Length: 262
Image 1 (cartoon, helix red, strand yellow):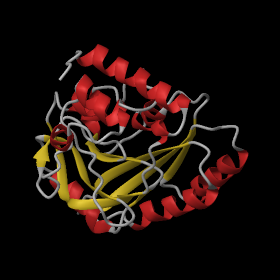
Image 2: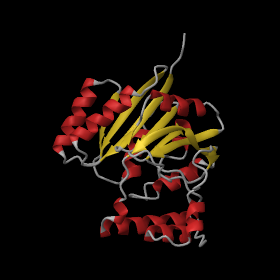
Image 3: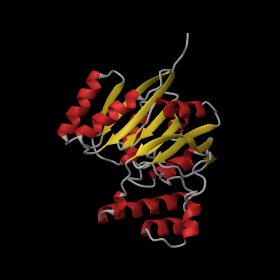
Image 4: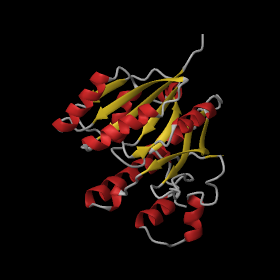
């Protein structure tokens, strides 16, 4: 008997359009490798959005491999994923942003094959913009200086900024304790061991924190042989509320891991 690898996916949704959700669902299902089983957890963080809730119920009712979780309260991105992580019974769990597109099942197969190395607990693929350019999301461990100059969005200390985001290493597999949460493959048992995301973060920096926590138990790597496409938006630059949440998250991160200035 051939045993299939068990995969699980979690997506946290908040007032997303029905069209986008249906597109995402189809993309996830169509790119599951044939030698894998899967379970998709759709987490609705906006229970008062009746149109979205109805769409998600229809998806879950029509596919036994989909579980709808409707959060009682919106406690943030990480808390939403944790609702799924607590239920997951898989070898590899994928954390997926709603605006991710997986090109084909080969990309998932590559990540799953890489995770067969038991020393690896987290694996992040290359992430491309919709125009095919690389999103430089892999970073060194942040300092106050690094976060400050990136948050301001100014082209100052450019060599430092390029170093921080591994500018010359996006075609090379390497370890990093600061991977981006837009798309991650995680060893489920390790994810459960650390309790998932730290729910003190409502939004922003929770992926940096998660990577660092996972790295205590094994390698957290960037793996460019696999890739996904991400329609990325920098919400923290668009509103005073977003800026406030970002600053709060930065404070929580440095209070937890140490205030390294540079």
